[in-house]
Length: 446
Picture 1 (spheres, helix red, strand yellow):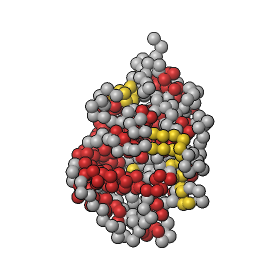
Picture 2 (tube, rainbow, N blue to C red; picture 1 turned 90 degrees about the vertical axis):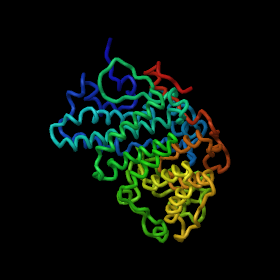
Picture 3 (cartoon, rainbow, N blue to C red; picture 1 turned 135 degrees about the vertical axis):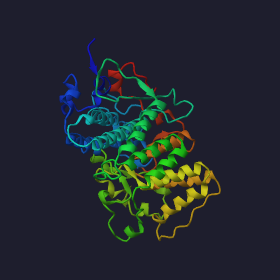
Picture 4 (cartoon, rainbow, N blue to C red; picture 1 turned 30 degrees about the horizontal axis):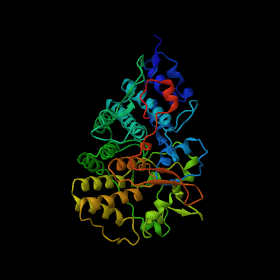
């Protein structure tokens, strides 16, 4: 039988073959792997890693309006209209899937080979490997939220998850989709190991330290509704030195800190495509929920006469992890564990730095249900355009918290062009057509 690369069987659609040619054309890339640590550092510093957030995920959310029509078959329009296939053709590299599996291939290459480097200490090799393990888990998590059903403890063992590719080795076996449970367990295992080997301080905000791995564990456990573990790892990540910026200082004209200097950013990750970042217009429904004294609205939005947009997203954006997200994970976990007063204390601490005048009304909640409503609102305002909203929509819909979501025709302000109903199957995308063409036995979502 003719041998194939696992990466070719499943992920050929994800790769720029020019960049990977020297590996794909060799019978065993382990024999040709670099022997110096700098080569692996260069991969971690590459755009494939630092600019790895799939911006098409933003168009699935209720955060923005897009200038597309129902006759448009582009991936952007397909996402905005919640069509099952993002790429309807089998010729182009699938968005989201292609970008993230390219990152997985590169992290697998590091994981498989870095320990054989002939320079550097054992500790440094393990740190680089742990960084790749963390990134692989992050890439798989993004993929899971798009291409698999939301986590359900009763069906996760049978719901199709993702094809788990963990190396770059040659094989005859075509990987099938693991279950949602198996996919999440693989991510958690990678992160549990990585947190023990990563340094406390990374070289830059675009690189991974142990607190990012802990924060990612908190995010995953929140998605899985495991609030005890989510609170635990949020607390561990919040040990990292940080500051909550008081936006009252910036309302009077002081410039917002650049990404590299913002003490609220734990990990800075950019989108892969700069062109769309400047055209993210806030959804009117999101704008309408902001209170007038909320500085997250007044500092971060510009009105062009028709729409609101954020001037901070004219670059590649920041879609990694922030300390405010960790505060919110901790608060939501506490509330779900019936520690309502502790949860609201965290929310009020955050709001002190976000509401005009430094003396916002203290929020209180009589019960868990009220507290969760307040916390979900704060998540939406605080994390707008940070790349977490699709995950939130998906997990909250599974819990019965999402109402009907409508996308509006651009420049119409009222004409509904697409509706995402609660419990809709359109919370899940179909496996890309090109992947199914190469892997006809792969389990489909629809």
